[in-house]
Length: 190
Image (cartoon, rainbow, N blue to C red):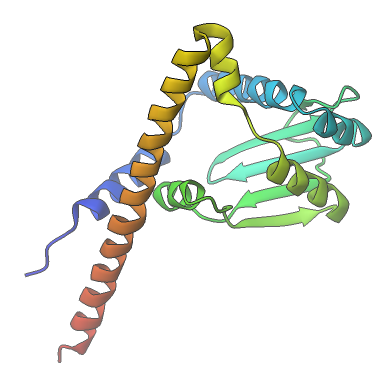
């Protein structure tokens, strides 16, 4: 008798939830907040804003599943949203459709598989930004909470992320191994 893993059920549930189409106003608001966050992080890195300022007007289209966003570099070295129908100099499509697999890759410190189309130099600049720009969450929290509480909170969150990473890496890998073994056993039956 074949039994299903709770992890495969969780993966199916996440897949069903991500197929739901959020209202347009919610997508617009989340994208607006995401651009504000990206610009906040970019402003903490003078080299990043200098690089983006050299790319002013260049358009980057990002897409994952049904979600997409089009951004352009501003003369100030920040990002702004532009209309999706605007011609993109660079298109980045996240190839991995599974949200859990994507989360697992990111938590393990890797980069998701991305299909790149367009300007190679612009792609190299975006890759540099992804490799070198980091959000110092603890610094931002310390401005609100103070140094000691910010450090304590970020330490707890780091431990939670490490625990989640360990859980996902071991349990999801075990589930994949069990699923492969079940498929092999079913194919072997006459």
